[in-house]
Amino acid sequence: MLRGIAVFSMQGRWQAAIAVALLSLGALMLPPLSYLVSGVISLSTLRMGPKEGAKIVVASTVVFTLLAGLLLGQFYISGLFLLSSWLPILGISLVLGYTRSLALSLLAAGGLGIVLVLVTYLVLPDPALWWQEIIEPFMATFVEQPSWQLDESETQLLLSNLSGMMTGLIAAGFSLNLMLGLLIGRAWQAKLYNPGGFASEFTELKLGKPAAIVTTILMVAAISPLGESLAILQDCLPVILTVFALQGLSVVHAIVRQKQKHTFWLVAIYVLLIVILPQMMVLLAMIGVLEQWFNFRRHSSE
Image 1 (cartoon, rainbow, N blue to C red):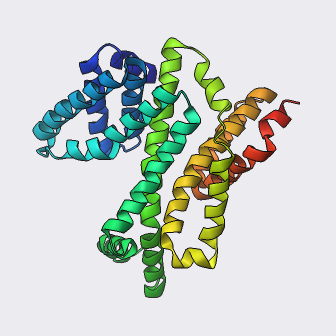
Image 2: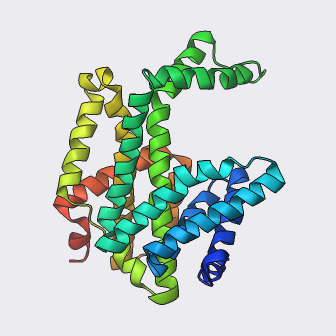
């Protein structure tokens, strides 16, 4: 099915636009489909070039606007998709197309996430307070349920913690959409035109020591007293951890491939990512950072 989406998208500009529009409609009900949307735009841009990629984004906007208007009565949704997903993934795909560097492209995606955090702090005097006002009505609905077990003070603490994390989590989710979309597009490109090429490219990914040093400094600063006084550092941390978690996944894939281990180990990693996502993200990010100095992949092949 996934290969079919890629094949259909490569048949022409309007086919790609239709795929983007239909998948985007599906993403309104099943958000993970947004990764496939980004994948289609990335594949189209990488394969057909920047001009055609831009034309596909325009065509997708036209098709999706018509569908959203006719089916949902909300024409403006296409603008939200355009600004939050389609244009950013087009830009990141151009970075990969011009530099031929997957590492630089993923770092650029993380950079956009950090820019989103900075813009949020420029626009909102207190992002945590703004999120608290947004979340509070939803929290009140949960509190009214008989199954709710937290008392008032615990509920307020939960609300405060969620409000403080939301900016960073949204920015990390934004960057993750770009990175996964780019990887899906690159994987589709290899599957159709260069079988086996993506596996080698991904398992050889190396983000570099400068980025690892910045990540380490940010981690230390975020958990230090300085982090409590500068919430912006704590909001940037989830973004950079997400980037290096992908580096950690690359290391795991490489070691499993080199040792010719059973794919059970990869399945276990992905299951754990679903079950204990925060802990696994931190663990993989730490592996990704340490890889820049210890080169686990090289040692595993010896």
